[in-house]
Length: 220
Image 1 (tube, rainbow, N blue to C red):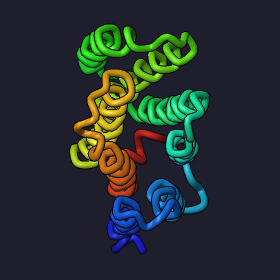
Image 2 (image 1 turned 60 degrees about the horizontal axis):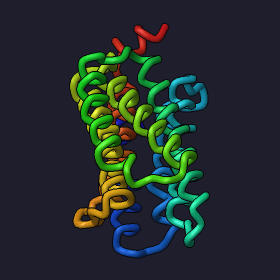
Image 3 (image 1 turned 45 degrees about the vertical axis):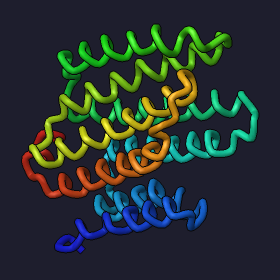
Image 4 (image 1 turned 180 degrees about the vertical axis):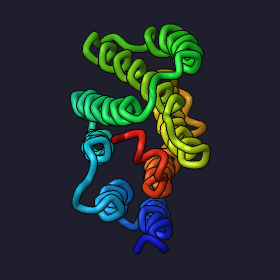
């Protein structure tokens, strides 16, 4: 098992490929769900609190994705989707803080860029105060999540993969923002691939990092 555990990442990869080719919702959910199961297997029964936090974040992402995918013209479901993805990012943020610290330089750059984006392109196109609060809150936690990932005390490879995973979901959300609030839909085809990629990269990072003895010593 230990020798071949990196190959387990093929399961969510296959689910993502099938989902992107219209194979059904079971494979769409399967990307995050299989990632959760894989981490439970890799870290065994005595799973650490930080891994449970990460798994819970994936679970919230599944719920958020369901709401966004099943809006059916119901505005409240878009807000619920944002809310559950917010909880997901809180989990990713919390996980990163338990294994490192915030990279304040990254946070400063992200906040500057995304607050400009919010007030120039999003704020003028929202007339619902609840939706505006939800979007702004989600923007802030996304920046915090990526900045905390940048401060992980992981070896270079798993850290790079985890940061790339968080960056992928932030990129996916940015495309959604452009599409929903600014009318730019030219890149909508990248939303789901980058969303799936985010879960795959983060899961692979944790699989690789599970054998890092230095990391284990830091957590004692």
